[in-house]
Length: 139
Image 1 (cartoon, helix red, strand yellow):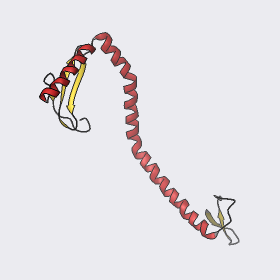
Image 2 (cartoon, one colour):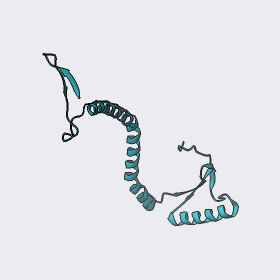
Image 3 (cartoon, rainbow, N blue to C red):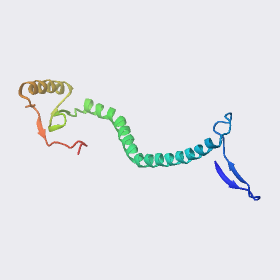
């Protein structure tokens, strides 16, 4: 509710009634005025949070879009031009990442089966080479 004073000195309140069918109660309007100011503060905080998170959301959406657009071409390239498949094994949250490459899809499946057997028997994949451990964020 906006407060104003007319030329003759009378005080006015101008605004909309949230519940026009409800009876007018002076204490309710005062609480509603506080609520209106509170909603403004909440809106400002919401806009700030959205403005700060918008760059991260945009980067994520661009990354997702590029992945969705380029994945079919990568798969076609692997199938038609014989690009090698990468097989990866790692312990969740700890230790190095083990990598190896296979010439085609069938040999990649065979390598995965062999690595599973090696991990079950020896505790580490003997057919793959260890890479330095990456951080949680992939760096």
